[in-house]
Length: 289
Image (cartoon, rainbow, N blue to C red; front, side, top):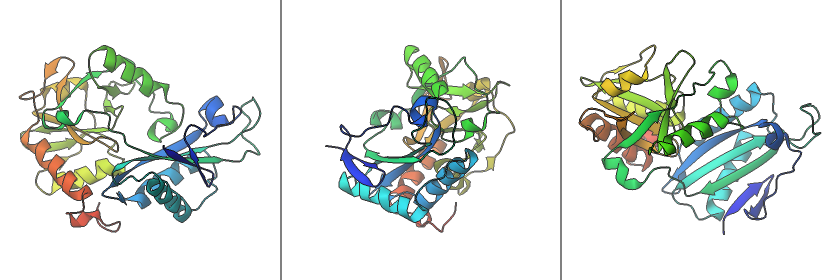
């Protein structure tokens, strides 16, 4: 049995209900934020919940709970589902209203889940992931793209394209052809021992990985990276909330470097594992990054 926190009440996920007139369901009018649990502890919940609050503010959705209340609710959901390691998601919708898009006088709804979720098989972490570039660019001028907004058919379309190509993830590009990440996270590439953080490097986990990389390697911030740059790199790795750090061994049918996980990727992956498992002093909420 899996329990879902719905507006203050834990219910079996089979019994959880969304009003068919909820604007999150009708229009994708809502926001969400993922969190990870490692060894029974939430990983940097204050940073994640701050991102959720910023996204809600951007769309003028008033979250009916304080940050402290949300954190307690996430911890309650994790405990109720006996998750010592897992993936949580906090979803806030605009709430039920009329069939039309009028956003006034609605009561936001909050849903929290705590599941086991890893998008890639564990054996790929020491070998590397195969990806393909999605042929459909996304409009990054839309502020919804840079937030975890509901209603993301662009991600679903990209993942379907990847699966049809025999890959598990897809590289996303903007209208100018620049790489902006994948459906599961943000990208870093390595050339001659230097790590290049592909913009925007905005998620909690990507910022953590960047600081971990800076401990041992030079880190640069290119203005733009294009798909051919990934294929020409010595190494590429992906960082995401759900997947952690994983190497990308092949893109668009071409091996990257040796076609397997490289030494820089391995160093960052192992450092990230130490960080999230509590053997690194950076784990505390107050530490960098």
